[in-house]
Image 1: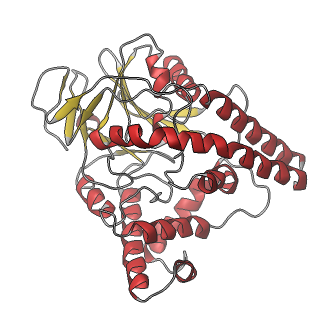
Image 2 (image 1 turned 90 degrees about the vertical axis):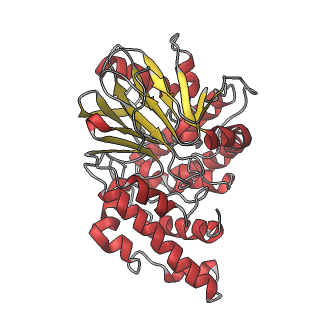
Length: 397
């Protein structure tokens, strides 16, 4: 992805080094799922998708399960929460640690830092990488600034620009949406047939209230190092190659490759759920993945879902996006409305979802670890979101 060309602690061809500054404390988020729609999409996350992936973690339990991928490389898989957290990749170097992505809340990031100290290493975190600007990958940045150690936050130039221009408004929208989310959960609890479901709703409500309370008094910590194409973190233990390969999930997606350990951290440009295309570039995304997929790796560390041993899931997701572009473009040319396309483009009709049992894989990951309180939402609901976003963003460049 990028070639080592220095023996320094880090090199940064074509990079811009910037400095941290604070903005208003009641500022930051709204894009837990990547959608530019405020109330409706956040409501989907907390309620509609809660049935899929928001089982409450027991009080006091770890928020992540940390898996060892290779020597010095770990994968922190996020447990389901009402406000979704991303996964994190953890690289333990000779004297310090590099962490990829920082979750939805500073308290979640602080919980992971404590878990790393307990389960992995006492070495300090020296670098935090933000793969893209979405809130579930950046909102925990502040926790790293409170460790008492020097921590630089690294991202691409477009990602920092998006944080500066969109983060504040999206946070305010997410906070404003919480009462509606709570009301939906309250009504669900009233209609619940079991004590377990009522308890689930109560815990979701608790988490949402805690989210609102924490994020009303919040400090935005922007990345301190940005780059355009490549950035390298060299170390005697192994090298980390950070790179931008083109627009995909957002306009600034960052990939972190460790060649000596055959590990690749992808953020949400590729993961084990259906892609979120709300801020995406559906025509360009498959081309970006084509570049990245040329790298040989044995440890796929995606932004959501479980760790994978190869690029199979990456290619499945790439093919799904490409097929949606093809079908949506044909539908638009034929004069079909968005609703008509949702009726036509079913899970069963999309060859990319049937190939390699991709649809079954998606359902398994979305429902793993969640309580079953009756019929679950169909995968078609999430496919419809992808159809809508592809329809809206088809010509984004």
